[in-house]
Length: 110
Image 1 (cartoon, one colour):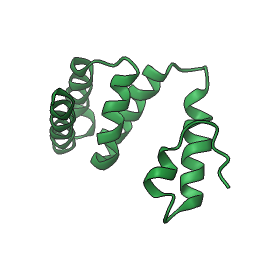
Image 2 (cartoon, one colour; image 1 turned 45 degrees about the horizontal axis):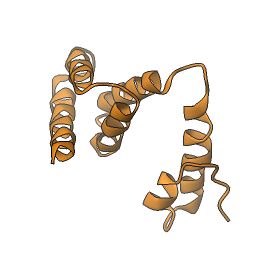
Image 3 (spheres, one colour; image 1 turned 45 degrees about the vertical axis):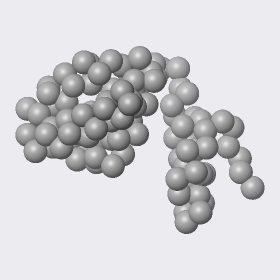
Image 4 (spheres, helix red, strand yellow; image 1 turned 30 degrees about the horizontal axis):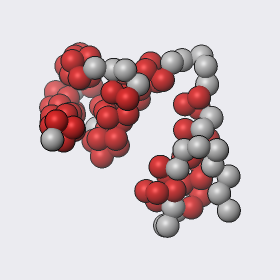
């Protein structure tokens, strides 16, 4: 039984193998945390992209770069964020992140 208010990405991506993780992703992370009014979704997106770059979490970065653009962050701002982070998170992580961004941005142009 799903208790998801609105978000179903967790259920779609891992619900078949990890239903509890899917439920927490959907109901806690996206339906609750992302909806808190103390930060705009745009700011949450920039914070999330920054954290994922710092962690080298490129698989998750694919989704969150597109999600950030849905929240009003421009491609130019995302590239600048990654460039800025190169000096704080390490050059290899920034280079990996910019390659993910290049792929995500190209997919949307098609």
